[in-house]
Picture 1 (tube, rainbow, N blue to C red):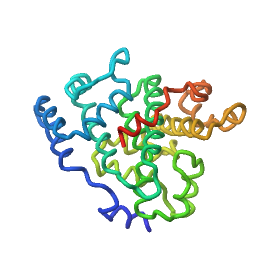
Picture 2: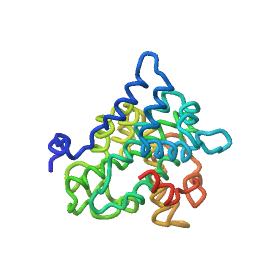
Picture 3: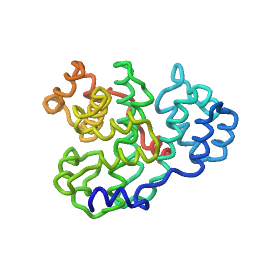
Length: 273
C-alpha cells in the first residue's frame, strides 16, 4: 500500500473521539473552565484512568507523590499540560486489538521511551511534557501499519526488539512508521514540535528541532538496548555517539544499563492499554 493511500483511508487512522474533542474544545476556549474540564473528564472513566497513569508515570508531582484524582491532576498540570495528556491518554484507547501486537508490551516499551525522553529533556532544559508525549507516541505509526498490512514481512518482528525496523520498512514499503506516526499525530492535533520529532526520530539531523528529534532517537536506542539485554562492550560499541555528540551529550553511561530510569512494569502498561 502506498503512503498516500494509507493516509487517505480514514478507517486505518483512528479518529479523535468526540468526548476528547469536547474536552479539548473547553481547554481551547478563550476562558477555559477547569471545573467543566474536570466534569467532562470524570464522565470518561477509561480516559481518566490513563491520564492518572500517565501523570504518575511522568513524575509530575513534587517529591514523587502519587496523584489520585483528576481534579488534583489538572490543578497540578495547568491547562497546557492537561491538553497534551488528554490527547496522549486518548491514544491508548484508540488502538485496540491490533493484529499480532501485545498491546501491554507495546505500551510498556513506549512508556520507557517516554520516561527516558523526559529525563533527557530536563537535562537540556526542553519542555518535559513535549518530550514525554513524543516518546509515548513514537511507535503509533507502526500500529497503523499493522492494522493496514498485518502480514507484511517488515512488520512481523516485535516492535520493541526490532533494531532494523526502520530500514526494513523503507526497503519493503518505501516509507516507515515515523512518517505514518507523524501523520497520525498531526491529525490528532498534537503540537507541531511533537509531530516533527516523531517524523524525524530515525533521522534527527533532518528535523526542525534537531535536539528534540535526537533526544527521541537516543531514548529509543536506550529502551531497545534494555529490551535486547545488551550488556558490556557490546552496549558501548552500539551507542550512537554521533547523534549524542551532535547535541552535546557526552556521558554515554547516562543511557546505558539498568538504572537509566525506573523501567515500566507490565501492570503499569496494562492500565494504560
